[in-house]
Length: 355
Ligand code: HEM
Image 1 (cartoon, rainbow, N blue to C red):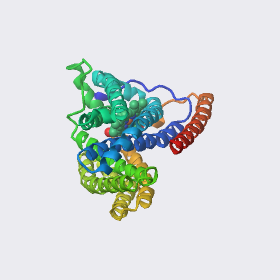
Image 2 (tube, rainbow, N blue to C red):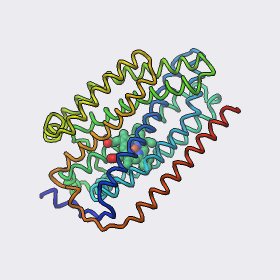
Image 3 (cartoon, rainbow, N blue to C red):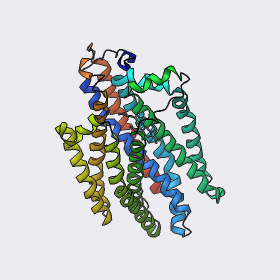
Image 4 (cartoon, helix red, strand yellow):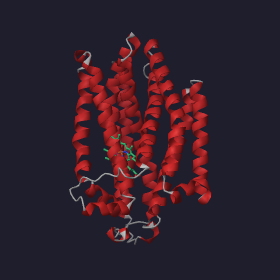
Protein backbone atom coordinates (compact mmCIF):
# COMPACT_ATOMS: atom_id res chain seq x y z
CA UNK A 1 0.00 0.00 0.00
CA UNK A 2 1.21 3.50 -0.82
CA UNK A 3 1.52 5.28 2.58
CA UNK A 4 0.57 8.61 0.95
CA UNK A 5 -2.98 7.25 0.51
CA UNK A 6 -3.30 7.07 4.32
CA UNK A 7 -2.82 10.83 4.77
CA UNK A 8 -6.12 12.64 5.37
CA UNK A 9 -6.84 15.81 3.39
CA UNK A 10 -5.51 18.95 5.09
CA UNK A 11 -8.14 21.41 6.33
CA UNK A 12 -8.32 24.81 4.59
CA UNK A 13 -6.42 27.64 6.32
CA UNK A 14 -8.02 30.95 7.27
CA UNK A 15 -4.93 33.06 6.46
CA UNK A 16 -1.83 32.28 4.34
CA UNK A 17 0.26 29.57 6.02
CA UNK A 18 3.24 31.91 6.58
CA UNK A 19 1.33 33.60 9.42
CA UNK A 20 0.87 30.37 11.32
CA UNK A 21 4.42 29.31 10.58
CA UNK A 22 5.72 32.63 11.91
CA UNK A 23 3.67 32.28 15.11
CA UNK A 24 4.75 28.64 15.53
CA UNK A 25 8.42 29.56 15.21
CA UNK A 26 7.94 32.50 17.57
CA UNK A 27 6.20 30.56 20.33
CA UNK A 28 7.80 27.10 20.20
CA UNK A 29 11.24 28.31 21.37
CA UNK A 30 9.48 29.98 24.35
CA UNK A 31 8.13 26.54 25.32
CA UNK A 32 11.65 25.17 24.86
CA UNK A 33 13.22 27.84 27.12
CA UNK A 34 10.75 27.08 29.92
CA UNK A 35 11.06 23.31 29.41
CA UNK A 36 14.85 23.60 29.60
CA UNK A 37 14.69 25.66 32.78
CA UNK A 38 12.27 23.13 34.29
CA UNK A 39 14.40 20.05 33.54
CA UNK A 40 17.64 21.82 34.54
CA UNK A 41 16.12 22.98 37.81
CA UNK A 42 14.93 19.46 38.65
CA UNK A 43 18.31 17.89 37.80
CA UNK A 44 20.29 20.50 39.75
CA UNK A 45 17.99 20.11 42.77
CA UNK A 46 18.55 16.35 42.64
CA UNK A 47 22.35 16.72 42.42
CA UNK A 48 22.24 19.11 45.40
CA UNK A 49 20.79 16.30 47.53
CA UNK A 50 23.94 14.28 46.90
CA UNK A 51 26.13 17.04 48.42
CA UNK A 52 26.18 17.40 52.22
CA UNK A 53 27.28 21.08 52.36
CA UNK A 54 24.78 23.64 53.71
CA UNK A 55 24.90 25.75 50.53
CA UNK A 56 23.69 22.83 48.39
CA UNK A 57 20.91 21.92 50.83
CA UNK A 58 19.73 25.55 50.78
CA UNK A 59 20.02 25.67 47.01
CA UNK A 60 17.82 22.59 46.55
CA UNK A 61 15.19 24.21 48.80
CA UNK A 62 15.30 27.41 46.72
CA UNK A 63 14.96 25.40 43.51
CA UNK A 64 12.05 23.45 45.03
CA UNK A 65 10.26 26.80 45.48
CA UNK A 66 10.89 27.83 41.86
CA UNK A 67 9.97 24.52 40.17
CA UNK A 68 6.12 24.67 40.26
CA UNK A 69 6.23 28.15 38.66
CA UNK A 70 8.52 26.97 35.87
CA UNK A 71 6.31 23.91 35.28
CA UNK A 72 3.28 26.15 34.89
CA UNK A 73 5.15 28.28 32.33
CA UNK A 74 6.33 25.20 30.40
CA UNK A 75 2.85 23.75 30.11
CA UNK A 76 1.13 27.02 29.26
CA UNK A 77 3.79 28.04 26.76
CA UNK A 78 3.25 24.65 25.09
CA UNK A 79 -0.37 25.51 24.30
CA UNK A 80 0.40 28.16 21.66
CA UNK A 81 2.70 26.00 19.50
CA UNK A 82 0.25 23.12 19.96
CA UNK A 83 -2.46 25.27 18.35
CA UNK A 84 -0.24 26.22 15.42
CA UNK A 85 0.99 22.66 14.87
CA UNK A 86 -2.65 21.57 14.83
CA UNK A 87 -3.55 24.20 12.27
CA UNK A 88 -0.59 23.55 9.97
CA UNK A 89 -0.03 19.81 10.37
CA UNK A 90 -3.32 18.68 11.98
CA UNK A 91 -4.01 15.98 9.40
CA UNK A 92 -0.63 14.36 10.19
CA UNK A 93 -0.47 15.16 13.91
CA UNK A 94 -3.98 13.87 14.72
CA UNK A 95 -3.25 10.66 12.85
CA UNK A 96 -0.05 9.90 14.77
CA UNK A 97 -1.73 10.99 18.03
CA UNK A 98 -4.48 8.42 17.47
CA UNK A 99 -1.99 5.69 16.58
CA UNK A 100 -0.14 6.23 19.89
CA UNK A 101 -3.39 7.25 21.64
CA UNK A 102 -2.85 5.24 24.81
CA UNK A 103 0.57 6.81 25.38
CA UNK A 104 -0.54 10.24 24.18
CA UNK A 105 -3.42 10.34 26.67
CA UNK A 106 -1.01 9.12 29.36
CA UNK A 107 0.81 12.48 29.06
CA UNK A 108 -1.95 14.09 31.13
CA UNK A 109 -1.85 11.76 34.20
CA UNK A 110 1.97 11.68 34.06
CA UNK A 111 2.04 15.48 34.11
CA UNK A 112 -0.51 15.67 36.93
CA UNK A 113 1.52 13.27 39.09
CA UNK A 114 4.77 15.13 38.34
CA UNK A 115 3.12 18.47 39.11
CA UNK A 116 1.63 17.18 42.36
CA UNK A 117 4.95 15.71 43.44
CA UNK A 118 6.72 18.99 42.62
CA UNK A 119 4.30 20.78 44.97
CA UNK A 120 4.89 18.18 47.70
CA UNK A 121 8.65 18.59 47.17
CA UNK A 122 8.23 22.34 47.64
CA UNK A 123 5.68 22.54 50.49
CA UNK A 124 6.95 19.54 52.50
CA UNK A 125 10.63 20.02 51.76
CA UNK A 126 11.77 19.90 55.41
CA UNK A 127 9.43 17.08 56.41
CA UNK A 128 10.47 14.86 53.50
CA UNK A 129 14.05 14.49 54.77
CA UNK A 130 15.88 11.86 52.75
CA UNK A 131 12.74 11.16 50.69
CA UNK A 132 13.12 14.58 49.05
CA UNK A 133 15.81 13.30 46.69
CA UNK A 134 13.53 10.48 45.49
CA UNK A 135 10.61 12.85 45.04
CA UNK A 136 12.59 15.19 42.78
CA UNK A 137 14.12 12.25 40.89
CA UNK A 138 10.64 10.92 40.12
CA UNK A 139 9.54 14.42 39.00
CA UNK A 140 12.56 14.61 36.67
CA UNK A 141 12.01 11.12 35.22
CA UNK A 142 8.28 11.70 34.69
CA UNK A 143 8.94 15.01 32.92
CA UNK A 144 11.55 13.36 30.72
CA UNK A 145 9.02 10.62 29.93
CA UNK A 146 6.63 13.33 28.71
CA UNK A 147 9.41 14.67 26.46
CA UNK A 148 9.93 11.12 25.12
CA UNK A 149 6.27 10.81 24.19
CA UNK A 150 6.42 14.19 22.44
CA UNK A 151 9.49 13.08 20.46
CA UNK A 152 7.60 9.94 19.41
CA UNK A 153 4.56 11.85 18.22
CA UNK A 154 6.57 14.62 16.52
CA UNK A 155 8.52 12.02 14.51
CA UNK A 156 5.74 9.52 13.83
CA UNK A 157 3.59 12.27 12.29
CA UNK A 158 6.37 12.81 9.74
CA UNK A 159 6.58 9.18 8.61
CA UNK A 160 3.35 7.97 6.99
CA UNK A 161 5.26 4.81 5.99
CA UNK A 162 5.40 3.87 9.68
CA UNK A 163 1.60 4.22 9.93
CA UNK A 164 1.14 0.97 7.99
CA UNK A 165 1.91 -0.84 11.28
CA UNK A 166 -1.45 0.36 12.57
CA UNK A 167 -3.28 -2.34 10.56
CA UNK A 168 -1.54 -5.02 12.64
CA UNK A 169 -1.67 -3.06 15.91
CA UNK A 170 -4.74 -0.79 16.02
CA UNK A 171 -4.95 -0.41 19.84
CA UNK A 172 -3.31 3.02 20.13
CA UNK A 173 -0.08 1.47 21.38
CA UNK A 174 2.27 2.37 18.53
CA UNK A 175 5.47 4.27 19.24
CA UNK A 176 8.09 5.30 16.71
CA UNK A 177 10.86 3.15 18.22
CA UNK A 178 11.96 1.63 14.89
CA UNK A 179 13.05 5.07 13.61
CA UNK A 180 16.86 5.13 14.06
CA UNK A 181 16.76 8.93 14.47
CA UNK A 182 14.33 8.81 17.42
CA UNK A 183 16.76 8.06 20.22
CA UNK A 184 19.50 10.50 19.10
CA UNK A 185 16.83 13.17 18.56
CA UNK A 186 15.41 12.62 22.04
CA UNK A 187 18.88 12.60 23.61
CA UNK A 188 19.77 15.76 21.69
CA UNK A 189 16.61 17.42 23.05
CA UNK A 190 17.12 16.24 26.64
CA UNK A 191 20.85 16.90 26.91
CA UNK A 192 20.39 20.35 25.37
CA UNK A 193 17.53 21.01 27.79
CA UNK A 194 19.53 19.95 30.85
CA UNK A 195 22.51 22.05 29.70
CA UNK A 196 20.45 25.19 29.13
CA UNK A 197 18.60 24.41 32.35
CA UNK A 198 21.96 24.46 34.16
CA UNK A 199 22.61 27.90 32.69
CA UNK A 200 19.19 29.06 33.94
CA UNK A 201 20.06 27.81 37.45
CA UNK A 202 23.36 29.71 37.29
CA UNK A 203 21.53 32.87 36.25
CA UNK A 204 18.87 32.45 38.95
CA UNK A 205 21.49 31.80 41.63
CA UNK A 206 23.70 34.74 40.69
CA UNK A 207 20.81 37.21 40.54
CA UNK A 208 17.76 36.24 42.63
CA UNK A 209 19.72 34.23 45.26
CA UNK A 210 22.67 36.61 45.58
CA UNK A 211 21.64 37.64 49.14
CA UNK A 212 23.27 34.38 50.33
CA UNK A 213 26.79 34.35 48.89
CA UNK A 214 27.36 30.63 49.59
CA UNK A 215 24.13 29.51 47.89
CA UNK A 216 24.67 31.88 44.96
CA UNK A 217 28.19 30.53 44.45
CA UNK A 218 27.06 26.87 44.71
CA UNK A 219 24.24 27.41 42.18
CA UNK A 220 26.40 29.38 39.77
CA UNK A 221 29.22 26.83 39.87
CA UNK A 222 26.99 23.77 39.55
CA UNK A 223 24.81 25.34 36.82
CA UNK A 224 27.77 26.44 34.70
CA UNK A 225 29.52 23.08 35.16
CA UNK A 226 26.40 21.31 33.95
CA UNK A 227 26.13 23.61 30.95
CA UNK A 228 29.77 23.16 29.91
CA UNK A 229 29.83 19.40 30.39
CA UNK A 230 26.54 18.69 28.66
CA UNK A 231 27.13 21.14 25.79
CA UNK A 232 30.46 19.43 25.12
CA UNK A 233 28.63 16.09 25.02
CA UNK A 234 25.93 17.66 22.85
CA UNK A 235 28.35 18.30 20.00
CA UNK A 236 28.86 14.53 19.78
CA UNK A 237 25.15 13.65 20.19
CA UNK A 238 24.15 16.34 17.66
CA UNK A 239 26.55 14.83 15.10
CA UNK A 240 25.10 11.32 15.70
CA UNK A 241 21.57 12.73 15.30
CA UNK A 242 22.52 14.33 11.98
CA UNK A 243 24.02 11.07 10.72
CA UNK A 244 20.94 9.07 11.74
CA UNK A 245 18.55 11.24 9.72
CA UNK A 246 17.32 9.82 6.41
CA UNK A 247 19.93 10.62 3.72
CA UNK A 248 17.75 13.13 1.87
CA UNK A 249 17.00 15.03 5.08
CA UNK A 250 20.63 15.02 6.20
CA UNK A 251 21.83 16.31 2.82
CA UNK A 252 19.79 19.48 3.35
CA UNK A 253 22.31 20.39 6.08
CA UNK A 254 25.45 19.62 4.12
CA UNK A 255 24.91 21.68 1.00
CA UNK A 256 21.59 20.67 -0.62
CA UNK A 257 19.71 23.50 1.03
CA UNK A 258 21.57 26.79 1.55
CA UNK A 259 19.36 27.94 4.41
CA UNK A 260 19.58 24.64 6.34
CA UNK A 261 23.36 24.46 5.79
CA UNK A 262 23.74 28.06 7.00
CA UNK A 263 21.65 27.28 10.07
CA UNK A 264 23.81 24.26 10.94
CA UNK A 265 27.03 26.26 10.54
CA UNK A 266 25.63 29.10 12.68
CA UNK A 267 24.39 26.64 15.31
CA UNK A 268 27.76 24.89 15.60
CA UNK A 269 29.61 28.22 15.85
CA UNK A 270 27.22 29.51 18.53
CA UNK A 271 27.55 26.25 20.49
CA UNK A 272 31.37 26.36 20.40
CA UNK A 273 31.41 30.04 21.38
CA UNK A 274 29.03 29.31 24.29
CA UNK A 275 31.39 26.56 25.45
CA UNK A 276 34.22 29.09 25.64
CA UNK A 277 32.17 31.67 27.55
CA UNK A 278 30.71 29.08 29.94
CA UNK A 279 34.18 27.70 30.64
CA UNK A 280 35.10 31.25 31.70
CA UNK A 281 31.91 31.35 33.81
CA UNK A 282 30.57 34.37 31.93
CA UNK A 283 26.81 33.89 32.38
CA UNK A 284 25.66 36.97 30.45
CA UNK A 285 27.79 36.22 27.39
CA UNK A 286 26.72 32.55 27.43
CA UNK A 287 23.07 33.57 27.64
CA UNK A 288 23.48 36.01 24.73
CA UNK A 289 24.78 33.10 22.64
CA UNK A 290 22.29 30.49 23.84
CA UNK A 291 19.12 32.51 23.13
CA UNK A 292 19.85 32.78 19.38
CA UNK A 293 21.18 29.20 19.47
CA UNK A 294 17.81 27.86 20.62
CA UNK A 295 16.04 29.78 17.86
CA UNK A 296 18.53 28.43 15.30
CA UNK A 297 17.94 24.87 16.56
CA UNK A 298 14.15 25.35 16.41
CA UNK A 299 14.48 26.47 12.76
CA UNK A 300 16.74 23.48 12.02
CA UNK A 301 14.17 21.18 13.57
CA UNK A 302 11.56 22.76 11.31
CA UNK A 303 13.79 22.16 8.31
CA UNK A 304 14.07 18.49 9.36
CA UNK A 305 10.25 18.35 9.41
CA UNK A 306 10.04 19.88 5.92
CA UNK A 307 12.65 17.39 4.68
CA UNK A 308 10.75 14.39 6.09
CA UNK A 309 7.47 15.61 4.59
CA UNK A 310 8.82 16.56 1.16
CA UNK A 311 7.61 13.35 -0.55
CA UNK A 312 4.13 13.67 1.00
CA UNK A 313 3.05 17.20 1.72
CA UNK A 314 3.63 20.73 0.50
CA UNK A 315 2.18 23.44 2.72
CA UNK A 316 1.77 25.77 -0.26
CA UNK A 317 -0.89 23.44 -1.74
CA UNK A 318 -3.27 23.78 1.23
CA UNK A 319 -6.35 25.85 0.23
CA UNK A 320 -6.82 29.22 1.96
CA UNK A 321 -10.30 30.68 2.70
CA UNK A 322 -9.29 34.08 4.01
CA UNK A 323 -10.88 35.16 7.33
CA UNK A 324 -8.70 37.69 9.14
CA UNK A 325 -10.85 38.31 12.22
CA UNK A 326 -9.85 35.16 14.22
CA UNK A 327 -6.15 35.98 13.71
CA UNK A 328 -6.62 39.62 14.72
CA UNK A 329 -8.61 38.49 17.78
CA UNK A 330 -5.85 36.03 18.67
CA UNK A 331 -3.13 38.69 18.34
CA UNK A 332 -5.03 41.13 20.57
CA UNK A 333 -5.53 38.42 23.24
CA UNK A 334 -1.86 37.43 22.92
CA UNK A 335 -0.66 40.97 23.62
CA UNK A 336 -3.10 41.36 26.53
CA UNK A 337 -1.97 38.00 27.93
CA UNK A 338 1.69 39.00 27.73
CA UNK A 339 0.94 42.26 29.54
CA UNK A 340 -0.87 40.36 32.32
CA UNK A 341 2.02 37.89 32.68
CA UNK A 342 4.54 40.77 32.87
CA UNK A 343 2.36 42.39 35.54
CA UNK A 344 2.11 39.14 37.54
CA UNK A 345 5.89 38.66 37.38
CA UNK A 346 6.49 42.21 38.58
CA UNK A 347 4.07 41.57 41.49
CA UNK A 348 5.86 38.32 42.30
CA UNK A 349 9.23 40.08 42.50
CA UNK A 350 7.69 42.66 44.83
CA UNK A 351 6.32 39.91 47.12
CA UNK A 352 9.73 38.18 47.25
CA UNK A 353 11.50 41.38 48.24
CA UNK A 354 9.08 42.00 51.12
CA UNK A 355 9.33 38.37 52.28
C1 HEM B 1 5.97 19.48 30.95
C2 HEM B 1 6.61 18.55 30.29
C3 HEM B 1 7.00 18.71 28.84
C4 HEM B 1 8.21 18.39 28.33
C5 HEM B 1 9.39 17.83 29.07
C6 HEM B 1 8.16 18.71 26.92
C7 HEM B 1 9.20 18.50 26.03
C8 HEM B 1 9.11 18.64 24.68
C9 HEM B 1 10.10 18.20 23.75
C10 HEM B 1 11.39 17.48 24.10
C11 HEM B 1 9.67 18.50 22.51
C12 HEM B 1 10.37 18.22 21.19
C13 HEM B 1 10.08 16.83 20.71
C14 HEM B 1 10.79 16.54 19.41
O1 HEM B 1 10.60 17.26 18.46
O2 HEM B 1 11.53 15.55 19.35
C15 HEM B 1 8.41 19.16 22.66
C16 HEM B 1 7.68 19.64 21.61
C17 HEM B 1 6.44 20.21 21.77
N1 HEM B 1 5.76 20.44 22.94
FE1 HEM B 1 6.40 20.00 24.81
N2 HEM B 1 6.93 19.21 26.61
C18 HEM B 1 6.19 19.23 27.75
C19 HEM B 1 4.88 19.62 27.87
C20 HEM B 1 4.12 20.15 26.84
C21 HEM B 1 2.73 20.52 26.93
C22 HEM B 1 1.85 20.32 28.16
C23 HEM B 1 2.38 21.02 25.72
C24 HEM B 1 1.06 21.55 25.26
C25 HEM B 1 0.20 22.10 26.04
C26 HEM B 1 3.53 20.94 24.85
C27 HEM B 1 3.58 21.33 23.54
C28 HEM B 1 4.57 21.00 22.66
C29 HEM B 1 4.46 21.16 21.22
C30 HEM B 1 3.28 21.72 20.47
C31 HEM B 1 5.64 20.66 20.66
C32 HEM B 1 6.02 20.59 19.17
C33 HEM B 1 6.13 21.90 18.48
C34 HEM B 1 6.53 21.74 17.05
O3 HEM B 1 6.61 20.62 16.55
O4 HEM B 1 6.80 22.76 16.40
N3 HEM B 1 4.56 20.41 25.56
N4 HEM B 1 8.09 19.24 24.00
